[in-house]
Length: 465
Figure 1: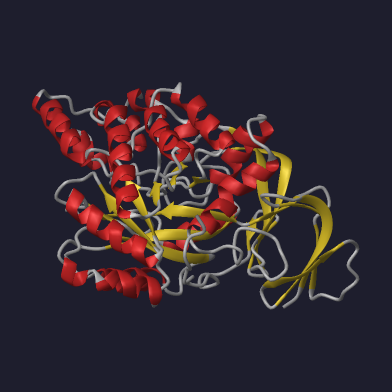
Figure 2: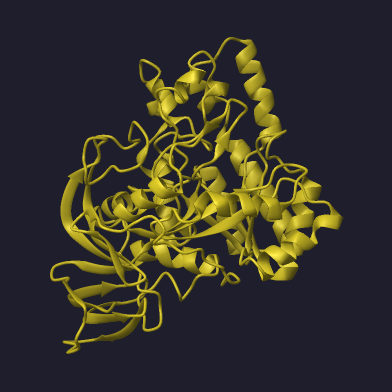
């Protein structure tokens, strides 16, 4: 099927111009003024921005949590459909190795979760929980055969996902030799567990204690250590879901020394703060996530980081759980509250509103932090992350003036499979109205017209760093 987009204002990370776009065989074939070509479908983009589809490099669909049989409420069908509504056309989820088992087994499990379900294209990072010398060749196979060039490790969650410094360094060194990138959940989980243990013994079990037991200094310390290990191992490092000014300063200092250190932040750290934990009727449990929401003053520092390039990307860490029946199992003990929150659908509008509409960043920077930078860091550029001849036709027609109030009850802003919206009541300017994935219209006038299975698995290349 061929598609002609007429009269659009095309915005990429570096461009801003008016032209038509002709799409055939899932790719952008021609770009020019007043194109006179026949097409199966013509889309009028007058008064709309034509931007690359968003790339969310941090989602957790169909993720088991804890020992009680709880699974995140969005699977790959509902989650990718919600992402598409919001203007995201590619996600990178996390295949998770079970300690003592093969990473290849984990990849098979996650392929089975996603197969035939995705509305948009998808890839996987690999979460590595342990890795002895004999199994290191698995990393070679993951990168060279399976197109997984990014490996995530945790300094948090001892006994579940935590990796000691020896494991971290071993994986980092091999990933660096292969040309890959390591992504890090950077919090000092060993120390945090001691703080949590004391709080629980003192009877401090309400949701705000999830935040009060995870201080910013222990995020900053872990970011510093992550960067030091990665620098020594010779591998680029990407800090996921950076939440606070102290952690950002560690990234800035390293980058000023020329270290290949990169970081993402998430909308929750720009648009929510720790006051949300103190709501009545256990409502604060909706915001139990890690890292935690911080004091509001951190937001200005994170915006500065996005504006100045010290933060490269935005993800969501989308990992929703129903409030009723899932979050509420921790009513008497915050340590039992499933850890995560929704956001994959609202990321693009939130950052457009807070960034472009409110004058903090340019249109080009908006595209860069929501699409292009992730494509480069995770081996997808220029196939994804830009609008250029030969690139995949992942394109969003964006209405920069339309306002909507984010709400569980608003059919424009909420299609995630969860019984609340973390940004309930926030009005945003900027909405994805038409979404095109590899040349196929999957959202038209804010209505989903695609189907499960439209998305393809992406074998990714090496990072551009």
